[in-house]
Image 1 (cartoon, helix red, strand yellow):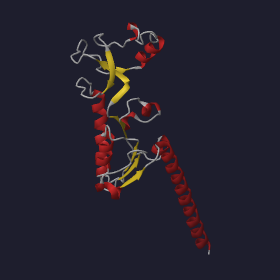
Image 2 (image 1 turned 45 degrees about the vertical axis):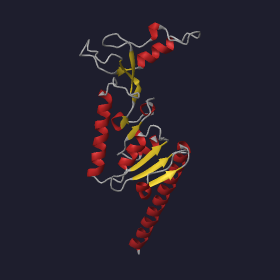
Image 3 (image 1 turned 90 degrees about the vertical axis):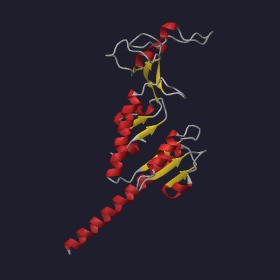
Image 4 (image 1 turned 180 degrees about the horizontal axis):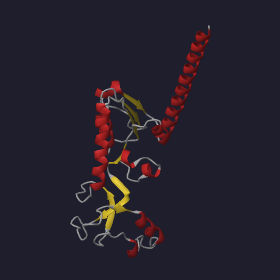
Length: 222
C-alpha cells in the first residue's frame, strides 16, 4: 500500500485497526483516520479528570509500553505488577488506551475529531476537483461494518470505483454493482497482483510513448 500510495499524492487511509501500523509503516498522519482510536495513545479512565487543564487529554503510550515490557506479568496470577499499570498524566488515576469500545461513552474524541476533519476535507476536495476516486477496501467484514459503510458512501462520488477485497465477504450492494469490483481473495496476494498489472501497464504506456516519439522524429527528418 505504501508503494501504491506513493504514486498518488491525493490519497487517504480510513481504518478500523487500532494497532497504529499505518503510522509505523510511514504513512502521513494527516492523511489517516483511525475510526476506533489507537493503542498508541492513552487517556484517563476518569471522564471528569480535570486536575491539570494544561496537560493534554490524550498522550503517547510509549512510556506505558516500555514500563510493561520491563515489568513482566506474574505467571502464577497472570496479572501485571501494580507499578506497571498506566497512570493518568493529569490526575494519577488509572489510564487506558484511547480506543473506542462498544458502548464506550468515556472515549476521548479529541484526536479522532481532528482526523475526521482531515478526512472530510479530503472528500470535499475530491468532490470539488472531480477526482476519479478508487476505494481499495481490504478485509473489512460485516460484523462491525464501519469501514464497509464508509467505502460504499465514498463510491457514491461521481466516477468513484470500489475494489472490495475479502475472501469471505466480497459481496457488494446491488446499487453498486456497476461501480464496484468484488475480489474473493486475500489482501496481500491481491495487492501484489494489482501492482504487477500497474507495472505492466506503466511499461506498456512508456513503450507506446517512445514508439510515437520515434515515429514523429522520423517524420520530422524526412
